[in-house]
Length: 593
Image (cartoon, rainbow, N blue to C red):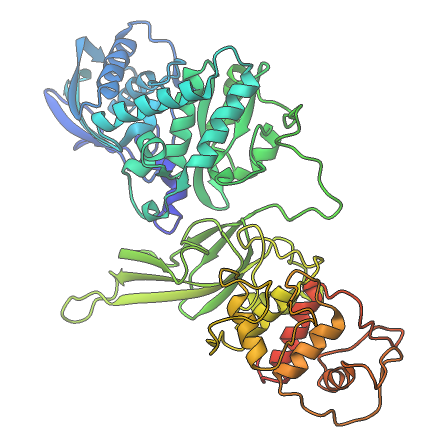
């Protein structure tokens, strides 16, 4: 389990008596005046099963479970559950099974926002001691650690109630309530990557999501559970294996059916990919078997198709060339330096690649681009590093050597992912070099957009190393000191790359023509004379201002022209053409690339 992505296994870091691995005190049976302890391994999976709520004819288990529920709701750390009359073990029944049934009753789904799954997921770890006389259990004493304090739980509830009031959900339809609550969480909460290697804490609670605005899937699912039930929408927390790691999300009731919603994977998105999905669409998560049983499905009938939003806010009609759907990319760190390619929006799940380690520490060369175990936010190149102490190979003095592993990750624009496109390599190369930038917070490149004169000179300036211009003022009346292209234009004028127009303007927003682009590059190279006087283009005359620039660019393999033998000098230079020109310049002139 320690190899897994801890932030995504947050669901399993809460207690459950339903798992194998619960240990009893000395001996497998119960002796006269026997005492023992029950401990729970928080790394093991498990959930309170609906089918385990079997009938208790004596009423002892139900009474004990209800008593335990009150203690857990009050966030009491130590409490004793006494049986009014000793509980006699049945044939084949163990103390473990009794404790399991008590806890199951305590966390039974009641429809109340501060009970059921909310209680269960609030618990971080738990142990218990018991007292029994022969085959009769007299009491359990529980010791509980919670992921948030009682005060924090009260603050989270207060915040949730305040948010629900601000959303003005009274009288609204079920869909509108679900959409509003989901929208609030996905727009206000950030994923807490610092909690990835933790075994609990506020990031795993509703307090983390609602008050700190930063949580892992467990805290996010708890917040939605509370707010949905508070608004009259039935909701459960479910769990499963997501790309080999543990993950949790919710199901909500709408029009008599239960749909899946996964706010964690839709954080910060304008268009949702995990909202009101049917059972089949979420089965890839490898849901825990508890939620696939006939009993569970009977109680919570699953929707058989994804819900279609009548207002088309959530399920927009795809374009002819849809952007790739964000995926979950898992990677195991290796001893040697390695490379990984992902796309903006992808969830990158990193595994340490070793067992038996301590003091694990993840770091990123650019957290704004990608934090460890998080979503790839913008295009570029980032290095992720992990260090940890190797407990299995200490030196003679007992010191544990520190292990370091790194991976270079290239993050692609969402609209530049096909290696067969001629602009694929140039775009990603120049983005990694911080020469070109994209749109929509560096997630889209928009290769078919026109390239403006301002953009072209800015990219050329960055390719040259962003040199500081000597001049303090610009001679062009339409270039201001506050413009992003101010320094690039000053630099270009000083180096004879641009002279502007006869009216004293630079016209930064004019589209850069192919002739202007090639001329700018030729001037940046120092106006070298072409080696040949043979003109390969039928539409380029020796009297054109771009004549020498065109011949030179063709000789240097920067310019290839069109299949019909033309250059088309007045054609607009598209962004994909622009990066290709710059990439070839850096490769054939600067000797890089």
